[in-house]
Every structure is written in structure tokens, then in C-alpha cells.
Amino acid sequence: PVLYEDTILIHAGPGVDAGLFCLKKDTGDPVWEKDLPDAESAEAKQFKGSWATPLLIENAGRTEMLIGLPKSLCSFDPKTGDELWRCSGLSDLCYQNAIAGDGVAIFLCGYGGPGLGVRLPKPGESGDLTETHRLWADQNTGKGQKKRNRQRIGSGQLIGKHLFQLDEPGVMTCLDATTGELLFEERLGRKSWSSVNLVGGKLYANDQSGTTFVMEPDPSGLKLISKNLPDQNQHTNASLAFANGVIFQRTDAHLFAFGE
Image (cartoon, rainbow, N blue to C red; front, top):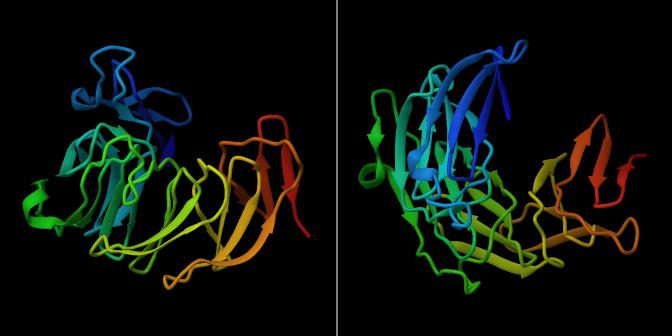
């Protein structure tokens, strides 16, 4: 969920029912709800849907709510739930969150699925923007973990025009956000579901063993600053969290807090 003014925005999916909901944060009373029929699976066992959390951005004088859904990256008005625009080119599996900055939005699908970059619209531009605003899109390579489109679960970080992404097999990549060009790919650690954090000008991520990596955000190649394993025999699918100078890491068995 995401807080917006005096409301909370919730994406309910994946499943045979999928939708967006806006509730009063103090009372839970509904403000609006929107069905997402294109994101619904035909049956419970169908491998289709979106696990994404909505992303709020300020664009062209308005607040937009971005979310990757099967087949399209979509933008909604968080006040009403009305769709503002969409850009097609995604596959059926959307795990990570949309990423936006410097007038560009990006979404990368999972299981070898495609990714795309879209130029954010100006006032008055709405509807299907695929032909007019899509900057790039790569191909769906399926579940074979092809080199270009590995499984992607955690979300990346966009710094300027460079997207830093940790793929599920444990490979750190950097893409040019405006062209989709792969600038580097290098092994970081073991498999990972972690999102990449940007704190104090450094990139942070962890793999499923609980090993934490700190990196310089350098598009010329992987610049590893430190590598830390808090405890042996740990497993985690969580991302790191940061608050008041403390790093929190949740594993299957423990919650760790690291600070000076």
C-alpha cells in the first residue's frame, strides 16, 4: 500500500480478481475502487498477474499513480482511479515496481519478460501512448533465463539516465533509461529478490543468503565497496530498510539492525 494525502492506495493482485482500491486512512471507508480485468487470471493456477506496489510521481502538474500490469505500464489518477494513460509492451508477469525520473518511466517484467521505457506525457496527452511515447522495448525471451532478460523481482534505482538493477540470478546490470542499452552486467552474489536502495549516494542490496552489498553507482561497471554477511545459514527474500541511521535486515528467522 501507498499513503496519498488522507488516503491509502492498495493494489489487490494477482488472482482471479484484481483491482485498485482507495480507502480513507483513518477510517478505512472506501473512496473509490477500480477493477483491473486485464490483470485477472482465468483460474487460480494460471501464472499471470502483477505483484507491483503503485508508484506516485509528480508529472506535468499532476500526481500520477504508475503500476505495471500484464501487457501495459499504466498511469491512474490517485484521486479518482481514472486511467490517465498506458504504454503496451509488457508480458503477463509483473513483479517489480515502476521506476521513474527525469521525464522517463521504466518497467521490467519477470521470467525473461520484456522491459520498456516511456517518455512521460505532457498536459493533455492521454490514452494509449505506445506509438508516440515509448522510447524502447525489448523482446520477451520466455522462462529460459536468456542473457538479456533474466528473471527480475526486486526493483532497481534510476540515477539520472542510468538504471541500476539486480536480477534474480544475482547479476547486477545497468541500463541506459532512454534507449534500453545494456551498459554492464556483472555477477554480484547468489540469487536475490532484493530491491536496490540508494542511501547516501551508495547502492545497497542483499542476496538470499543475507549477504549485503554496498556499491558505487557507476555506469561503467560494478564498483563494489563492501560485502557483509551478518550470520551463517540465513535466508531472505526481503529488501533492506533504512531509518535514522540504522539498516534493518529481515531473514526467515531473525530481524537484524546495524548501525554505528
